[in-house]
Amino acid sequence: MNTLVERIRVGLYGPDGQQTPVLARLTWRPGDPWVVEATFLRSTRPEQDVVWLLGRDLLWDGLDAWVGDGDVEVGPGEDDRQVELLLSSPGGHAGFVLDAQPLAEFLCATYQEIPAGQELLWTPMDDELAELMKENDQ
Image (tube, rainbow, N blue to C red; front, side):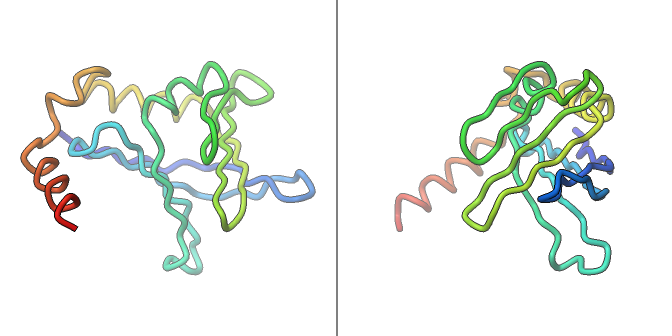
């Protein structure tokens, strides 16, 4: 199993509706196959990079229809070639637009590594059980 990493350009919506280009890094790890880590890179201050954990299936479903409720929403953009990603936290809100094709290709590669519905077959259950037991002891 391979960790997959893809750098993509996204547009960050500003308050005036204008887009600012931002580089993002998508990372998928077979040890946690349900999650895509999205790191929004700040080239001048890497310590201020913003990291979000996004559901792989949520991103996939968002290629075709609006999905998500609460902190993360994703859906088709104004045309078929774009996807919009809306993120909310107590610290603020951000809206991004990205090209659908690189996102779809990245997600397809993750599903080639571990197909949908087979995630549990590849998850190290001993580690998961140990983590659950540790949480119960606290």
